[in-house]
Amino acid sequence: MTNSARAFARPLFRSFEERLGIIVFAAMLLFASTHALLAHGFKVGDLEIGHPWSRATPAGAKVAAGYLTVKNTGAEADRLVSIQSDVSEKAEIHEMAVDAKGVMTMRQVAEGVEIPAGGEVALKPGAYHIMFMGLKAPVKEGEKFSGTLTFEKAGTVTVEFQADKMGGQSQDHSGH
Ligand SMILES: [Cu+2]
Image (cartoon, rainbow, N blue to C red; front, side):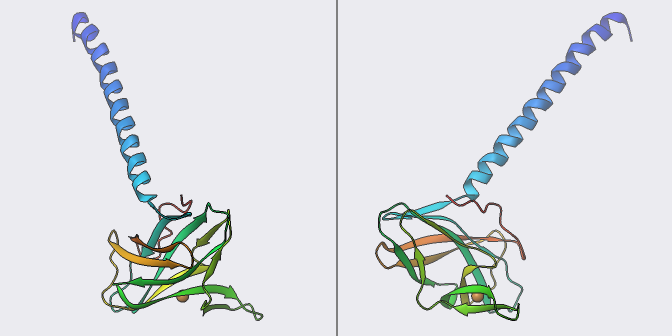
């Protein structure tokens, strides 16, 4: 390589690195915006419903779980009383708890879940959750399905549950 060629090659290499840097930065921005999309939310009255999500189910499964957060920005407590979705025959509110013998149990919460004034309640794995029972079809990863939540005071709101992979913990738990 001649001196003049080398002198030409060096700045070219630097600009290639710069370009690579821009590509990496662009990829990060893309990831950040995808992440923002995943952290989806819904509103009804004083309630903010954050990131409803579910998990893909194995073929033939009859149940799927649903998770979300509910933030109450109002001055009065409200209550999540029921859920309805086209993906299943019915949906119940459940609670996972450890009984006196240290065994994990699941019970239906017939009275619903109270959302305290100014508070936030998370329906999440190992705690309160929605149980879609009598699934009409398996839930597939990446799919969305709608569900209608009914609150005692705020009324009803239809939200979209995003299906994570089987056994997934979801992309975002923070809720908004
Ligand atoms: Cu359950």
